[in-house]
Length: 170
Image (tube, rainbow, N blue to C red; front, side, top):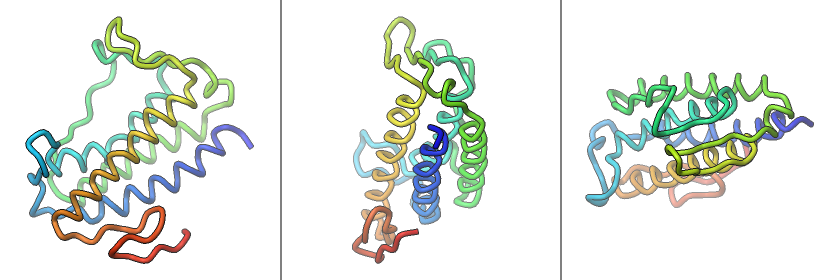
């Protein structure tokens, strides 16, 4: 198996979990935030929906300097759940295509990630993809699950049963 084939197994599972969570975002609660320092539900949902673009950038670009970005920041304006899911599906398709086309050599190459002179990470693309994209996305999807719970929305069973839903392997 290639590195991309291994990553695609996790990718497909995590994207399915993310979509199932985004499908439950209540349109009437999008400005909800559990704490004054928390991101509003609308922004958090769109952050999750567009994060696969970052995964694509890790594969497509030679690195990223957040102080001098070459890519535009994703628009995190939430309009409707349907539009959020459309943006997610587009982001997923782009990232999946980049990952499918990636060679082991490309994925093993260093990927510098910085904010000007401050190095955030300078490890292989595969490690950066897993830590800065996958783990980051899982973190925010879990946050979204808490927002759902606090708003009385049933939380999907993602890695096992939730209090609202039985789990079955997909």
